Image (cartoon, rainbow, N blue to C red; front, top):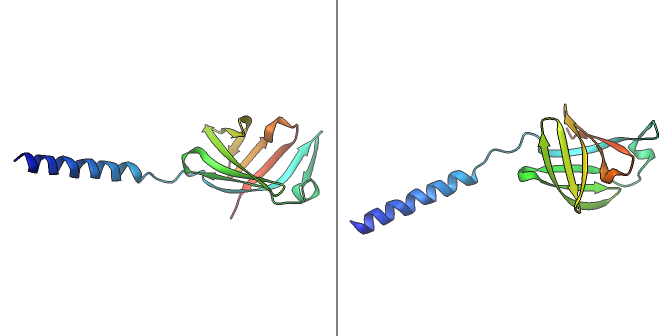
Length: 119
């Protein structure tokens, strides 16, 4: 009888672990491609500002990758309403995520980038 109860408990725990691991994907996850940069009141196409690839990939669980002018960095992100905080190497950058576009001043450099969801 004890073995049967122990076996049932093991099965119940395994089902519980499987259920926890099957979370739904974040609807904001995806690759956002840089399209413009704005500084000193001027907005320019990203190609006129940076030569290399520039994009942000938001992944499930608040993690992601930033590729800035061809250099890649790991990031963490948090979304509260439309306000997004992107943390890169311990530095917080603040912006918005709305209508499939991220607008953010990365690393508070005074240049606001606009990224649009790929596809």
